[in-house]
Image 1 (tube, rainbow, N blue to C red):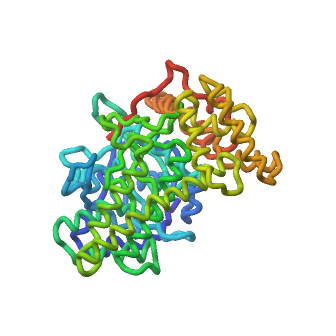
Image 2 (image 1 turned 45 degrees about the vertical axis):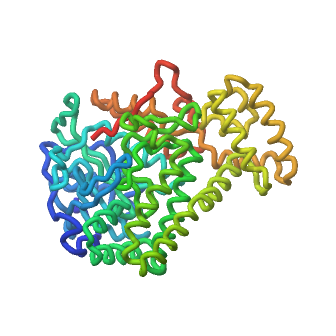
Image 3 (image 1 turned 60 degrees about the vertical axis):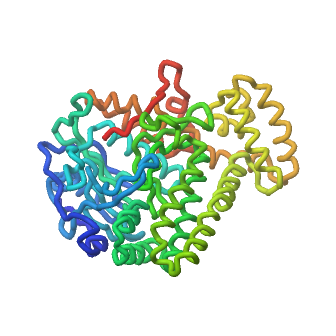
Length: 474
C-alpha cells in the first residue's frame, strides 16, 4: 500500500546555517506500537498506509517519503538558567512539513539516530520515553491545551543503552513547528542579524500572519504563552524542564521529558530529577515563562530599531505577560468553580481553595471534579478547612442565576475525571518493557475522553504506587 503525504518544506528553504540536511539512521527491525488514526486522517494521511510495511519503514526512519526534506535544526538556549551556545536536534529529525486541510505541520522523528548536534550521544530513544510522550501529549490535546501530538510509535528491534539495556523506539511527532526561543537566541548570539530577520519573517508568515515586525511577533508569542501556561496551571501540569530551547514560539507544549501531572496539590511540587533547586516547580512556571520571554525579547532587539527605544518597547511588551496570564488563569479557574459572572474577590476565593488544598493534601484533579458533585470535602485530610471555604463559595454561587444542573454540567466539562497519573504511566511503561502493550493502549484510549468517568484509572496512587521523581529519559 502506497503512503502518500503532501509535503511543502518551507524550513528547508531557509539558509543552510539554519539546519543540517541528513537522513535518519535505519533500524534493524521496525515493529508497530500504535498509529494515531484520528490524527492521521486530520493530516490527510491514510492510516492503513501508515501502518503498512512501507509506512512502517518511514516511521522507523528506514525510508524517506517522497517529497520530504529531512534535516536537523540548530538552536541554542538557556538550560536551568545556564547558557548553551549550540544545542540543536540531537536525537530527532524534521522529516518535512505536511500540508494538511487544517494547515501546515512539522513531521518529526524522535530517536532517529545521531546528528551533528548529538553531543556524543547515540541519537536514539528507548521505549519508555516514547510511550510517555505519546500518552502525555495526546492527553494534553484531549484536555484542550495546545501541544505537539503523537502520530505514531514504533519499536526498532535494537537495544538502547542508558543505565541499563532497553528496547529502542521512535516517536513520530507532529507540531505547528519546532521553532523555539532558542532558535532566535542562536542567531543573535552569533551577531547574525540577517538570519534573525529571515527567521522572524518566517515565523510571522507561518504562525502569526498580519503582525507587524519583531515587536508584533514578540507580543503575539507573549499572548500565546500566557494562554498556554494558564492552561497548564488549570490542570496541575508541571513541564519540568522549561529551558528556552523547550519553549515553542508557536505556543504549544513541547518536549515532554520529566513532565508530570500532580496528584495531591502543592504549589512547590517538583518531579523532575534534574530540577534540584525547584527552578521549574509548579507555581514558578508563569515566572519562568516571563524569564524565557525576556530572552526572546533580547534576541529581537536588533530588529526593533534604535536600541533605547527598542529596549523600552520590548520591556513594556514582556511586562504585559502577568496581566494577560492572570486574565486567562482567572477565566479558567472561574469555570472550574462553576462561576459564570465576575466579582472582584474571585481571585481570593480561588487562591483560598488552593491554599486549603495544599494544607489538606487534597488531590488536585479529584477535588475540582468533586466540586460538581458536592463531595469535594472527602479529598481533604482536614475537611474543616474545606467546609469554611465552601460556605463562601456557596454564597458566591447563590448570587448567580445558573441552575444547579447547568452549573454541574459546565463544571464537569472543564474539570477532568482522568489525567495521565504518574503511576499509571509508569505501569504502562513497565508492562511495555515486558512486551505487554495492553496497559498502554488501554490508558491511551481512556485519556482521549478525559471528562468521562474512568473509575478504574482515575484513582490517585497508594503510598506504594507514588512516583516521586520523573526523568528526561534520553
